[in-house]
Length: 448
Image 1 (tube, helix red, strand yellow):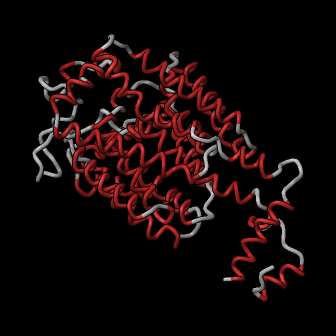
Image 2: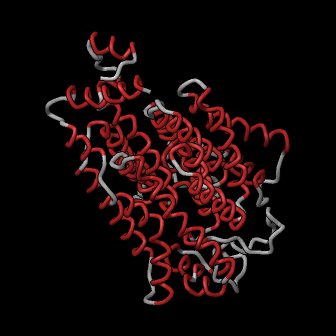
Image 3: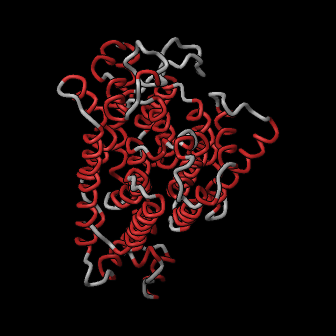
């Protein structure tokens, strides 16, 4: 339509003519997109453990130091890219980093022991949000499709050629060497797969297969990956072709069945539901997910009295709630290691024990209140992330794993960039208006 073409032309021209002299279009574009390097960093974050597992199995034995060194290199590379493309909008996330570091030092002084893992768990979040803010959302589909090919291919490889997969990665020995696990921790001492890969009770019982891990090496991580892809697909499907959508859907179903993720299946279904209703809800309503999920967990425990020692969802929820009931002021304020070992089986208890309840609440508020909700994509993904975090936190602290956290937060940061680009455009942001003559041309629908 002529009027639409005129509006598009006007916006482009006004952007060029109205942008501040200190930030011409070329500089804004350079600052907004760092090219393919951030994508490679995210791929490295997701896949480096698989590479180290192969090295440990076939080249030389490794230790936890190799994993730590790899993560440090990835984080340093990420911040190098971020600094090269720094903008003022990144400052709040760097404030989060400073606060996390200061709290970690305070905790170390009170407890008498500094464990860098607790600081690292949270620092991964701002790191990959900021890295995502250097990357245009249009590059996300390329990253997700490439990663999906690798992950789904790994699932099929593991399912169809299990001995070859097991021999290539020797996951069991890798985790014994780098995570301090022992042979007795594994369900099946004769298997080279992950601890819980041979769990006897399957949700998807129609298939006779162990719980697959693919290149993520752990069934839980593969399940988390499926939830993240579901949130991305629900938020971004309008910007993808039908072929890509079908590939992501079919691949995610294969991965979900393969990993037999009970929580992943429930979470994915709720993410899809949330994607439908989120655009209709008031802004910042995502704040309610965590308190509502916690309230539901308490009601479940009170009403059903599940066995807290059972290895199922109600049992894990009951375990976490009962553990929180044993917390004193030291645990609630993150200044005690008394129940830290027990908290490893509850994401909520672990987060509070290592970051404090104040830190958890403050981060939840900051994350949602600081998030842009100007587009359906941003809104849907924000709600999807909140569903994933709130449910995952009930039974596991796997949301801190770099293998999935990198992708989750990178996507969020990149989607947030869409708003920052519009803010660079005074007309779109509502900071400038065309002159009356131009408005008259637009209202009449005339092309220039």
